[in-house]
Structures are given as C-alpha cells and as structure tokens.
Image (cartoon, rainbow, N blue to C red; front, top):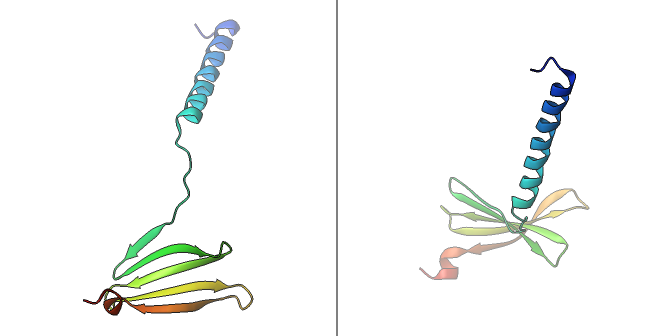
Length: 95
C-alpha cells in the first residue's frame, strides 16, 4: 500500500492534518492564565508572596511554631533581603 508514492504522500498529509487539528483544538480549549499569589507550606512555615505600592515584591512568612509573621522585601541596591515587620500573631488575634 505505501510503496506507491501517491499513497505515501496521502498518509503523510493526513498525519500532518491530524497533528495540526490537535494543536488547533488545544489552543481553543486551554484555560486563560490567571494572576494570583502563590503560597507554600513547608513544615512549620507558610510563605506567601505579595506586592507593596505596585513596584516592590514582598514575602510573608508565617512561623507557625513561634506564632510570628515576618514580612520581607528584596533590597536591590544592597542585593539582600530586608525585614520590614514582625507581627506576634498570638497578640494580634488575642488567644
């Protein structure tokens, strides 16, 4: 069947059409990207990113064992991470 050059050409064109149709279908069925914060929990810590004044990225770290919230930002001039604030969660929520 595939010894004839016309049959081989038809099979290759059909395979190409299937691949292109699959790519087209995948393009129209994907979900839109949604921006949001990402959070991660590792052991006794919860980390969440955020933004301050539209240009400064923050990292919020909750220390579950110590019941503290620390807020950090990247200081570009000194190329390090600075602590902005520490909140005692036990006092903040008055347990």
